[in-house]
Structures are given as structure tokens and as C-alpha cells.
Image 1 (cartoon, protein in one colour):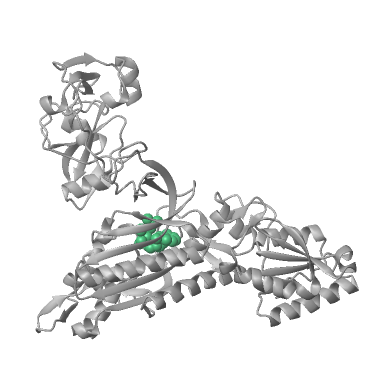
Image 2: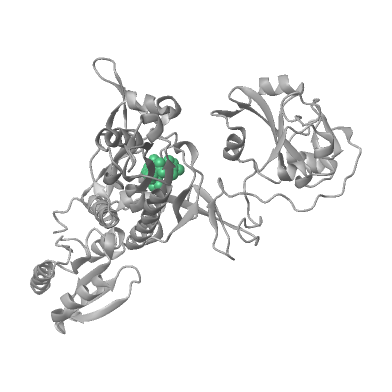
Length: 565
Ligand code: ATP
Ligand code: MG
């Protein structure tokens, strides 16, 4: 490709809307353009990278016995009503009506469609296992589309669905995908680590997320430097405190005018945050409940929702809080409440604690939670945090931020049962298919690669996903000898199967070098008068900026070697 012809409009300025490096560089290097919030057009360079990631994904899916299909984006509401997700999916679903006022959605995911497909075609255990996948656009009306293609509303996903006859078969499919994912991310040049995750609304129980560690990641993970355990904080279990503290008391009410926050309580009563117990009032399927956690801990709503087994959990509004506690917001406490009180293990074990007194401007102190409060239940309700004991080996946990690039799920029969996707075993017995689903954010992976492979000047593509391997930059394309050398090299490298861009523009060398660095071709060949006199060119490696002089006759073989390794 000739740079003069390449549709790659680079930008010198950092676009105001782009916070993350990957977002900035995807716009600045002319890989993509925004169409509307969370929706992007891929330009030729960006599209080439996207295709290369897809190629790697397809290769590994095929190796793992995946068969590619293409499922419809436009999906009828009826299928989603059968699974119960038409109402559960909520506002993230793009819903449309046809001319007959029938409801459809733009697929945010494809469990329903694929289960309906398989139920109509698969009859016998002899047809199993089946692993079907597609690479296609997904549509999700995200509350906050941001970071470019990292959180888009239209994005490219690879999703594979496995159908097995039993748990053991499903385990095998899961393991095959888990290994394939490790290989895919490795081949893309990503350092992605699998972490235990929460299965959330999609269902099932076993699931891992593949996380690319980066300070800008939206997910928080805990990991154990000692044993390698790693989990999303949403999922990581917290060990209950080992020994009970010594009891104190009795509880006493104190006047705490205008003292509402944990910090204010600590300062006013001279206590530590871990001695303050937060009482949070929720509506669980519209019924009020109170949840207790220590002031130095964070309540994990996913854990609470699971513990309660409710389908909806929302924090109560001020009106409800005032009705339930009889006090202004900020003075809720567990003593004497008439609604069920559920406490995190650590909160339940607290002695000499301070709690709201359910009376405006009053707190109670010297409270022993288990002794003084009528607890309905205690459970693991808090979010794991730095320094907590590793659930696997007990050593202190560390935290890190990450971007999820993929996730693997064991679904069990969550979809096959409601949708009636069954098969007949050897004895003619009808059984539900045991399913798994496995997603990779293909477009998000492109951005994640840039997050891990870039510097102040631009992108440093790993060869495996680079839009082109090498750019040839004559210092002056007007110069006859430089032009001739550049053109000859351009042809000979192409003949060797090397993906090459020739910068044939009549630009100043600085402009051409800047663009090459910004776009991030792994190698650059600079043709200048000095080295040419010795029949040599400069070979520059983008990632390290290492420069070496290479004989013109050897450039092709040297590059072939580098690209291979
Ligand atoms: P997240 O927690 O980031 O919202 P998710 O758990 O909803 O993601 P899945 O349903 O597991 O995502 O989808 C599989 C993969 O698709 C994710 O691992 C992620 O890489 C990608 N993905 C999900 N949502 C988006 C999005 N809005 N934009 C780009 N990629 C996405
Ligand atoms: Mg996920």
C-alpha cells in the first residue's frame, strides 16, 4: 500500500473526548472514527487489525472443534420471553418494532437464538458435543458508552456456545475454551489473566473472566502474590474474622448533632472506622431490609442479592429510610428495627461499635452487634479488599485494575430447560442439553492491545496484529536514487509476502516519521543519502526504537526472520 493512497487520516491533536491512550491513538492514527456515542466506523488500518484479531480467534476456535455460523442480529421477542429475559435484560437492550408492531431486539447476546436453533435440529446423544460460534456485531445500550471501543453500544464479539450431554462433557468444553482463550490472548500479544468471576444475570455458576491488567481498567480484581489465586472483587469470598473481640457495654445512646458520615462519627466520638457499623436500607423485590457492614468495609450488592435470592435490589429512597427508622437519613441503626437485619460476618462480630440510634442526631455506642441487635442472618456481604486473607492460602491479597477481554461460562441447563432444548440418550431418555457460553470482545481486544503496547509517540503493534509489518520511508521521495531504492524494496518485500507500506508522500521527513510512529508499524526502513552511499538502509524497531544499518540486499531476509519470531 502507498501512503499517498492510504485512507489513514492522522491527527496531531489529542481529541478532547478521548481519555484513554487506546481511544486517543485509535482516533489519532486514523484507525477509526466515531459515528455516534459508542458506535464507530473502522477505517482501513483499524479494520485490518480487527481482521487479524478475528483470524487468530477463528483459528483457535476451529482448533478447539468450534464450527462457525452466523446468527441473526434481529431477534424476535418471543424467544426472549421464553427464557424470561425479555423483561430481565432491562434498558441495555435495543428494542425495535416491525410494521406489524411485533417486538424484536438487536442481539446483545445469542443464547436464546442458538438454543432455539439447536433444539429444532438436535435429537440424539450421537450428535453431541456441538460447539458453534460466530464473530459478529452485538448491540447493548450501555448507560455510559466510553473509552472508544472498550465500551461501545455496537461492538464485535466472538461468541461460542457448547452443547453437551452432561456435566462432564460441559467441563471438557469449558476447559477447551479456557485453554483456547489463553492462547488467543497470548497470540495477540496480550498479558491477560483468567480470574474467577461472578456469573451475574447470565446464570450458571462456574465462570472466569480474562483480564488485561491496566490502571485504567473498569474492573477491580484481587490476586494473591503467594499462591496465584485471582478473582473479580465482586466474586472473591471474604473469610469471617477468626476470633471474637472482647465484649464491652452496655450500649448507650449519645447526642451526635449533625454527625452523619463515618468520618464525622469517628472524629466526634474518637473511634476508628472499623468500629462504626453502616446500616444500609434496601428494597429487595420491594420489601425493605437492612444490611450491616463495618465502616472500613464496602458492601457488595451482588453478594447481598445472591444471599437474599431476590431479582431486584435497590437502595431505599430517603422517604422509605425515614419511615423505616423514624429518623433522618444518616442515623439508621440495627437496634430495634422492625425490618429484617442481615449483617456481614465482620459487622456481626463487632464489639464496642457505634451505630445509628434510629433517632435524628443520635448514635448508640458500646454496642455489641450480636448481643444487642436482632439479626435475621449473618453472611458474607462485603467486598474483598487489599490485605484481606486469600481464600485459597490465607496470605494477604493484593488488588489491581483490569479490563475484561473475554469470559467463559458454564450455563448448565439455564437456557435448555426453559426453551426445551433436549436430546435422547442411549436409553431413549429425554434430557436437557448442558450448555456453556464463551465470549471475546474482539473490538475491545484491539483497544486492550494498544493499552499494553504504546508509548508517548503512538502504538507499538505486536507483529501478529499489526495493520502492516513495515513502512518504507525515503527521507526524500523526490530524490531519484532514494525513490528508486524505495520502489525496488517495496516490490521485493511484497513478493516475500511481507505486508508493507511505502511512504511516497512529498512530506518533510519529520512528518513521515511521526506518522509511522503514531500508526505503529513494528518496523520502519529509512532510506537516506548517507546510508545509501554504502548500499545500506536503516532498520528501526518501533517498540524499542533500536536502529541498525542493514545491507539493502539483506533487508528482506532480515525482516522475514524478525516477523517470524
Ligand atoms: P462488562 O462487564 O465489561 O460489561 P459483560 O460481562 O457484559 O462485560 P459479556 O456478556 O461477558 O460482557 O461479553 C463478552 C465480552 O464482550 C466481554 O468479555 C467484553 O470483552 C466484550 N464486551 C462486553 N460489553 C462490551 C461493550 N459494551 N463494548 C465492547 N466490548 C464489550
Ligand atoms: Mg462478562
